[in-house]
Picture 1 (cartoon, rainbow, N blue to C red):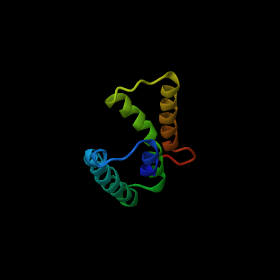
Picture 2 (cartoon, rainbow, N blue to C red):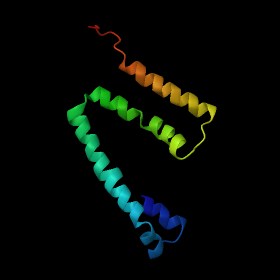
Picture 3 (cartoon, rainbow, N blue to C red):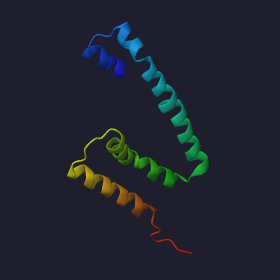
Length: 102
């Protein structure tokens, strides 16, 4: 899909494609192959489905936080409140409501 959008946005040349081969290789290997494999193995062997779904639902939260830390992105009040609410929701989802505490 990205290639389709790129064709209509600006002309593709071999220089532009060959200039980005390292980024394409990095995304293909680390973000797709390795990360997806670890995610699948972790979901299958290391955690229960409920905990895995809660953990995966925090992806946007951590993307925003690391964007702030690494990329010096700026949070506005609405984004800060959203992150706080998402974090609170994850904590509440882990509390043992209706379960017997031993």
